[in-house]
Length: 151
Image 1 (tube, rainbow, N blue to C red):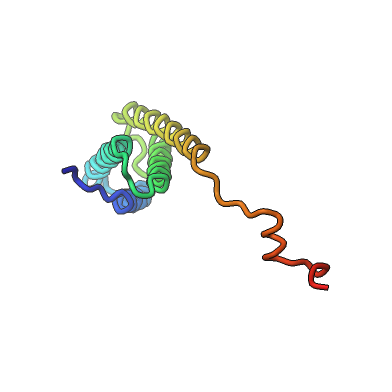
Image 2 (cartoon, rainbow, N blue to C red; image 1 turned 30 degrees about the vertical axis):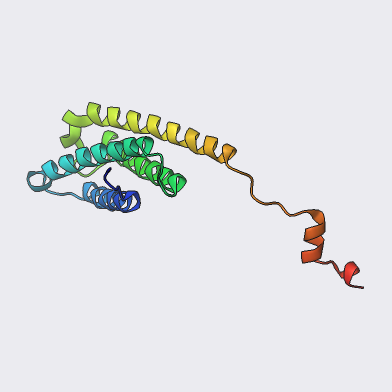
């Protein structure tokens, strides 16, 4: 039997981790103490988002699949925004990230491609979903009579 993935909780944790990293790179932290951890966390987030994305594609019975898909898109967007700050050299640690910039750029491109695919799948599933119940004109008039109907 397959392992249960708690998408919502996992995505929440990644989002919180990104909040922490975002705040951390804006500070003037000592590289000696924090740089390796920040790099480690960036690679952890990249790998984990990728694994969640793959699990979403492999799972056919995800409860609230559209909600999970939107959550993955949101975290991927936050992550690419975070990486863009580092790539643009506007973080507190600046040029310390130089050896990783090419890899970060590749990560950003990959996640953007994934987001495009996810957004296409959301649009496709929205178009294929069953239409919502529509009330007829007669039902509408019965439910909401106008002043003229009451006289």
